[in-house]
Length: 124
Image 1 (cartoon, rainbow, N blue to C red):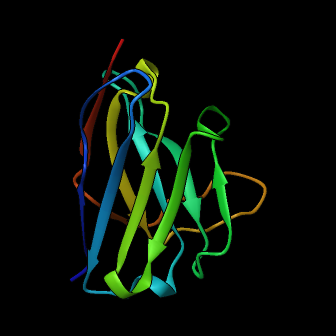
Image 2 (cartoon, helix red, strand yellow):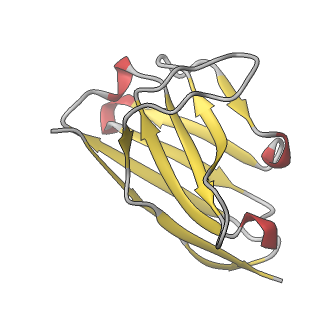
């Protein structure tokens, strides 16, 4: 059974940093593209960042380019999202996704596997 477990969320002041982790069990991380999505309060879930199956290619939504970095560690079967210079608009529940389709020139299409999410709150 495939499971994704996120951690690393919390409350941080604007300009601060957080590192989100997503540990995968039941499947190897090296075989699939993965992505991060977020859902602000009262809004729909939207794409944030994606990484190719091999980890060599990444794609970001414009609003986080230069501030967020997606990466994966195959030996830990884990996906990460390093978030720097956080802004109040980044406040959301962040979820990782497995098994979608990675594109080099447009947002990742989500696959069937989701984590439960981790809350990120950025105060001004």
